[in-house]
Length: 158
Image 1 (cartoon, helix red, strand yellow):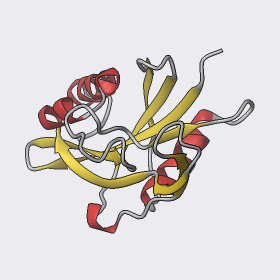
Image 2 (cartoon, helix red, strand yellow):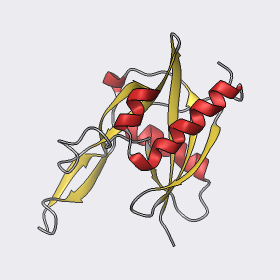
Image 3 (tube, rainbow, N blue to C red):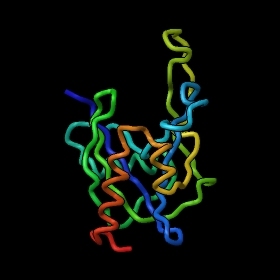
């Protein structure tokens, strides 16, 4: 059975542009990666846990920001690892400089047996949809497409 994660995509209107808030994974593996490395704040959830509740919890753990408002289902994507990711969008705002992430432990260097504590997320930033399509993991671009379609169709109030 594939692992499952749930996440939230915060969005805002900045003038005529729609912007989304993405996060960059922490740790040495991701340190020098930029394009195609950013992600929706997300995390795995356990059997019986409601995915939207897990998404809210993970968003707060990874960013330090509260997730409130109306949550719009963006569907599910399969990442290259095989993991299934459910995501919801919500309208909000935050100052990326105020991001505070939880810590996690990794083995680094790989297969060394040495443990290192790192922030799960090392930074966050606002991007226009065009910029976000360059920054986000390729498997998550579909979330941006669904958000854009729902905003332009009027399913999400502007």
